[in-house]
Figure 1 (cartoon, rainbow, N blue to C red):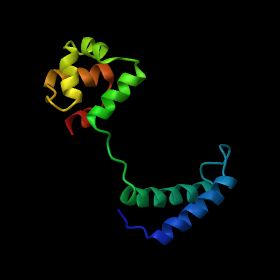
Figure 2 (cartoon, helix red, strand yellow; figure 1 turned 135 degrees about the vertical axis):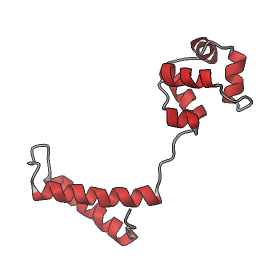
Figure 3 (cartoon, one colour; figure 1 turned 60 degrees about the horizontal axis):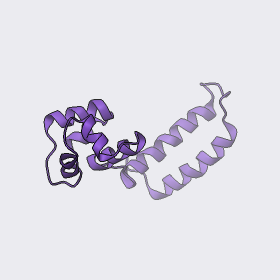
Figure 4 (tube, rainbow, N blue to C red; figure 1 turned 180 degrees about the vertical axis):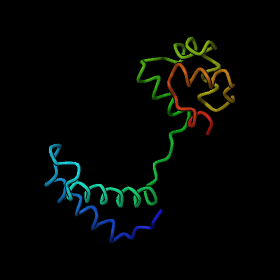
Length: 119
């Protein structure tokens, strides 16, 4: 990955703003403006991956997010995972390691990415 300077990043952002005013959904795929937009976006993405990396959420954060999205209380999650509410509390408070079975259930039933579970 090429190291992009701060100056190049700022210039790319300025150019992106200009291009977004000129490009629309109707712009042909082989348009020089659309190709330039893609190149400028790549420069910005490379810079931001280095300087502003987005970290994976923790497993607890993901479990709590899914509980919120699915409107689950701890007792509901316990039922879903076929365990006790106190065990769920131990998992969420970091007092107990998650078992392989629970990890699989989190992946299948809450659609939590395996990479997040294994971190």
